[in-house]
Amino acid sequence: NAGVTQTPKFQVLKTGQSMTLQCAQDMNHNSMYWYRQDPGMGLRLIYYSASEGTTDKGEVPNGYNVSRLNKREFSLRLESAAPSQTSVYFCASSSRWGGDGYTFGSGTRLTVV
Amino acid sequence: AQSVSQHNHHVILSEAASLELGCNYSYGGTVNLFWYVQYPGQHLQLLLKYFSGDPLVKGIKGFEAEFIKSKFSFNLRKPSVQWSDTAEYFCAVAYRNTNAGKSTFGDGTTLTVKP
Image (cartoon, rainbow over all chains, first blue to last red; front, side, top):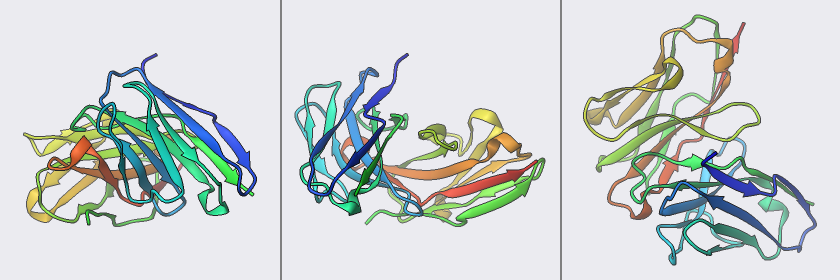
């Protein structure tokens, strides 16, 4: 089925470890996003990519890096995980101007101990 | 900075009660407006959207929302809720003059429907 696929679904890291969250979409969307969801804080934008080859910081980029590998794939990397990065991470995609709304992946629940 | 305010953090209703969830956004640029629903343990799904035209939009599962430009509001309504509507609801705004159509989300409203 068409959609957004995220891996892994769950991950536990020790403080200081690194990891990459993978996201791929087959919607032929130009724009892709990474959000984190924390209780009572809604969704906060970490990074986004308007099109292949471009990335921009969102509201909470510190401690993260991203790569837009091609039109389909947009990865999020934590170089040195901290407990404050414990969260649920969602990848999403949309058409260039977002008028149709987002299609979300199923999320990655990350715990940093 | 763009912001979205959802008036209620937690709403508890009995089945068949009517629902209205408030949403206001921070300023009056040209906007796309959305409501998303997140059922327990699941990802967010688009419930309905406003892009242009009729300010009263209808979505899935009997939900509707009304865009009132003068009030910067986009309230979600449903005449009669069901137990299966128990979920978290997020309002989101995308300003058309921003790059990539990125959306700003409200903090969410948790709806609990008692059977």
